[in-house]
Image 1 (cartoon, rainbow, N blue to C red):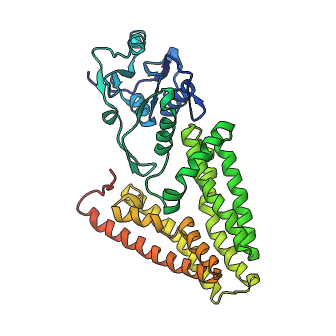
Image 2: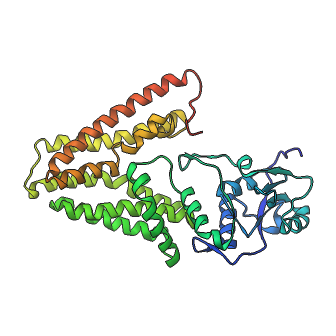
Image 3: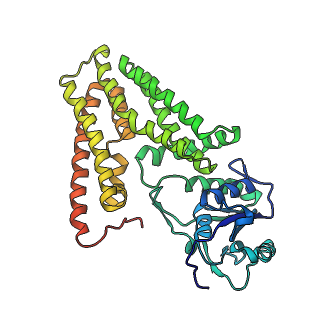
Length: 371
């Protein structure tokens, strides 16, 4: 069918029911949140199109967005050929609902498999993976929750977040969801740990500071995953979380340098080390922002090298690894000096990548290796 020139006004409806919960959310509530986040928010009496979802299936958010954004009537088919969702004009809503309740689609609508309805590349999470579409059954619930959690995880990030935190983060995220703990409550707890770690570093109590800093980095992973799996992310929560992430690292490193004097290992050229770390941190952020502005993509997803570099680039978690190892050897002063050197090296590497990208763009627009 030909596409319309004007975007329709969309509302959503859940077909059927399921007693099962995914990440402590009833199926119908989960689908309602997905529809709302995708823009299917019109009042039923004013809607020109309806997106209908079966309650006994679990949908990747990309699939719901795909259904809401399409301007022609269409159906989403599972691997077994059954119809699990449809997008139809208001006049055909009743017929579509009856057909969908039986796992069938209307005869004259476009049919899509999950991989053709939604792009496999997720720019926000910096990864490529097929969108999931899973039958909601009691015997598969743990596997479903594991897949939904995996879908909430960033593909390009630091080595601690990518390799150490996933399993414990999934356990704590499940516990938070079960108890009704919100992502903003987790973020608030991480803010308290930020302040506690800074105070301990300032006093030269490095082990106590690290004992607060590492749980903070863990909760920084949990709050984002909790928001995604329970569909509770909000503009304020996003600002709250990212503001903490952006602001606190330089203050930690400043406190670390100050604490070397009461610890008994005052650092020569401490001002130079501090300025290298703080200026390098700010300039790296500016480099990353400039890359996005110029090339319309995150710096760390351009080529495979950039994604590998992101594992260890001089951000909070890799720097904490350096400082923890140095402290275990009784040399927190050497640790912060190494961090300063690593910040300078990463700043230079990112500058080189900016120049290389500018040269590469002369041959055409840049494209992420993940896309």
